Image (cartoon, rainbow, N blue to C red; front, side):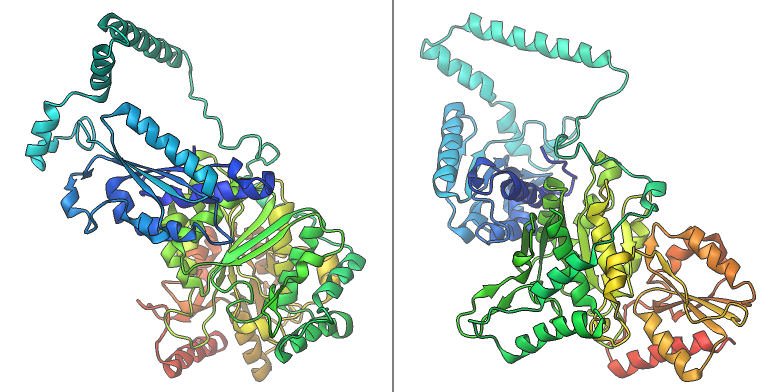
Length: 618
């Protein structure tokens, strides 16, 4: 039984993800041994859009689970809404037509026919590996709950229901009529059942507290829940340089007997040169090397989302296609001595359903680095219910850990209101009770170690990463292979060039905006300004920030700088979690309803104004 919030149909995607994880890890050769059963209401299956998203996954390589049995408890009432007001389709199960799945319509009053329908559904799924629906037509005796008065809205329907025998009595009468049992037998089993319920009730009252068995207890036995103190402890994410070189060789090589477009050939050669000649590793190499090292260490890696195989900004190229036959080459599947499995799937155009699926996958396979990447960061808006009900709250509500990683491209580069902000402020507002990690990295090495930390830890927390766009190819956004092999994740990066005695303005900044300020500082030749990067926003490295404040004690001007409007970005979060922040000078855009200007000229003007305000204290 999967934990289920009150948001109807949300759990369906989680169930599918759990099932796929179990199939991949425990039954890769016999996946039908794991069967998803999803229970729907008639109003929900026809009214909730996520059902369509899940149904569209049914035959897709990255998401199929070899058939789901959908049981619709069709009581003809959605809360108090008559079914005629709840859908335009003839049947509530008409979504099944999308995949030409069979639908069995059965009268819930006929107990034997319901059993027969269930047997048919099971046989069909096991034989064909496809979805099947059971539309179990019944009624709801008491309205929405026992205290509701359904006659307010359906007086005629509930007049009929009030006179109607229940299923138990109908079936008992049938068996008596057929002389299979007598009335005394019915009274006997009814008495025994009530006695059993009373006994269970008394037993429950003897317990001081309720004991809840965690979902998939055996799978999660070695992962312990972590508090802030544990989350802030460093984790060894180093990796031997000689092994790293072997993975880099794989990533810098293409099959010689196949033909590729010129851009791909140049790109792969560039990877090799970056590692072996220039020692300037970029963001794409950071990602691919992180995945490769984890695969070699026996961890699985699963990535899904829109356009993830090449990457929205054409940086990742984890899947490379030949020019003429479009044969797929996945270099990471050739990592020497790799025991882990690498899977990457371009998703359907869905956020809500796919994030739910991948959350479920991470729940079903904690040893897998499970990643969902948004095409642009704010596209995760479409998955907001998953973020609110599971990602941010599940550990607090149900004691459930989860290691899902969300990669959200973020950065103000004049691409408009919908393609600039990953709505950082929304995730940070949800941060509490040590519920997740939130990071905004500025170096490839830090991203490398962050991804490795996610699975090397002996606990699991969701990880939200605001990833770059322009920085993917920025000449300064590089790291050395030694940074990868011997380094660790840095929650805060101090200014290596600044001399504390000279610094008059201390600037705290996060993400891509650091490079904008760095460029301006170089232009102005200001050695009295220190730029300190906060790479982990939650849990906020408060102690490290205070050490920096102490180091630059001569600074008379302490700034929080962000490219987002003041009511967005990380500013409010910093105010909440760092008491010293109330005295910071804030450099940001003014309060805005839209994340960014639609006009690139206006956006550039606003951006430059914020940069200038950092260096020109009024």
